[in-house]
Image (tube, rainbow, N blue to C red):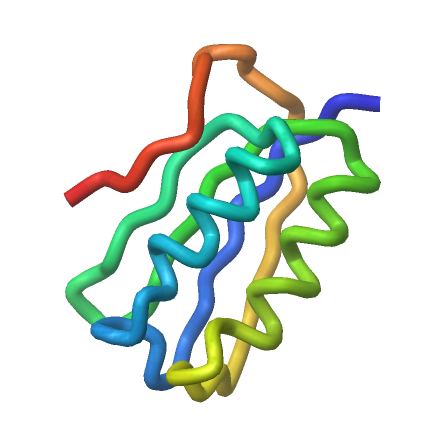
Length: 91
């Protein structure tokens, strides 16, 4: 079943390739949506795909790339909007 998830990753997660890490995984798995750095130092992700794949994305975010130090991950599940056709980084 297709779902939408909004993920916020906190810790040392900017400047460590977190956005590229999420983007590459998402493109491999057919996830659509976006990832961006936030002014508070966190990374926000909005993604749409099958629920099982989004759970895998959530687990990936909890680990982060090897240079990251993830302290907290929050999630909010939503109904999909079908408004994305790819996964991209928002600068």
